[in-house]
Length: 283
Image 1 (cartoon, rainbow, N blue to C red):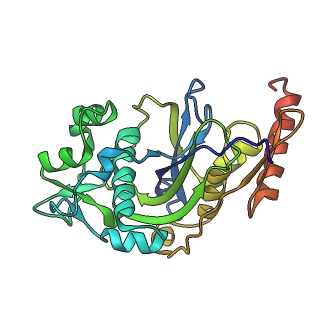
Image 2 (cartoon, one colour; image 1 turned 90 degrees about the vertical axis):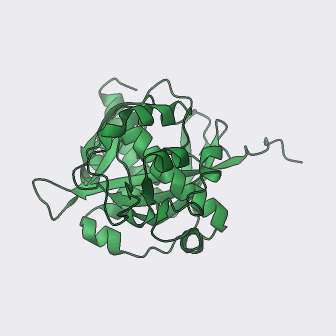
């Protein structure tokens, strides 16, 4: 009989890689990244994309049946992610909600002109705060403001499951990608991060290898998949999405190793970062 504890339950989550064309070199891509507060219980200090867990507000949003949804319907998303349609609907809702809460970017348009996109999401500052403190549901917000969720502005990208060995919390995370709507801006006005900015995928990967940032394997892998591409190329690609669940091994010295399809490259960069931090007296 094994003495290993039972794995923690897995909660579905949505993460959005918010991208834009680099202002200086518009043929290359930038992605919006945030650094989580050091005091956070999960992934403290890590550089991440906007996102979070699916909750009851997302499952009960009722956007499709109430004409507050524009773009591919839940069945389309379900087929690409390999899940049930009701979960797919909740994930798309969570993706849009979390992006708005954490970055101020709103994937929505006016209900009477669903091809339109909100050009200044800052006018909904109060609603954003109410969404974050859970006093307002995303579906109610859209209907009250006569808006529709622009599901067509998002694309399915990847699916990662937190290793069974993780003892804090576990997520079944579905990654989306979406371009920054024209006229909108992303910010760091949220309660979970202490820094946020745009960076090229290559620069973010280099920051990790040089010990200037912390990246979890899923974040590192998605950045690597974006590197060298344009926004148009990323939005046009049709990804074959296969769930990835790494295996985590905690070593005797308290360090850890992880196994997934590209673990060697990730661990090489991580070891380089740790070496540089130790040399600088920071670890």
